[in-house]
Image (cartoon, rainbow, N blue to C red; front, side, top):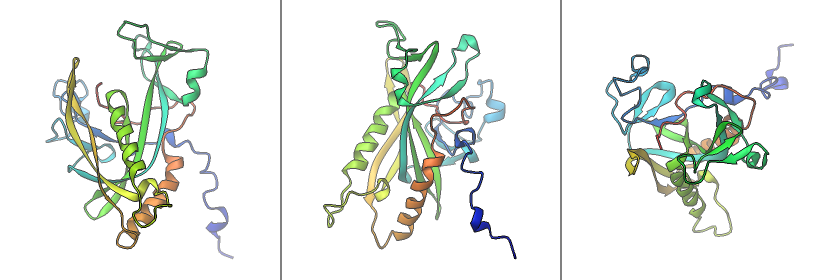
Length: 250
């Protein structure tokens, strides 16, 4: 009798830590990004021909994407990323749950100092991060993408969440729409503060998807939403941070 793969589908893969694998991050090119800045020490290996500050890049393919980019959010999560101090070699330590703030080693920066807004676990800095996973349109195809929001970009993540929660079905007032009920336009925009200027994220709702005309996309997004549970970063053992996960400077 021929082997039936359905009897053991996925066996052994359910314990794979997805956080150690490359993730499909979208990033924004900044003035100092190695992809653009010829003076950056890593420019020779990371340069993307023709890219400019403000471009959105799909990291796995090192490809500049058109703007605004049409996207359908399918999942989001929030956690802390932990980092070693630079004087100890620097580098990513691991992902930590939000409950890390209750640990004895947790502390905030010194009031009135440059570290005032920072958070620490022992000597390591921990950075609050919101991740969005979505489908984005490439020609006639839809691909998965992820953005990590930290620092000044958290306000855009929270604004996106508010937009998602504001979606409603006119003819089904008692039905709460899923996260993937609408499309959004994703772009970069200039931002600045006392520390300088940079390009940040801009997210605007496009339209609510139609049950009939957009059925194929809704089915695709539904499947991606289920898969995202295993694909989004999660608290785990220390692992190498996927390349291109965060590049907004402030």
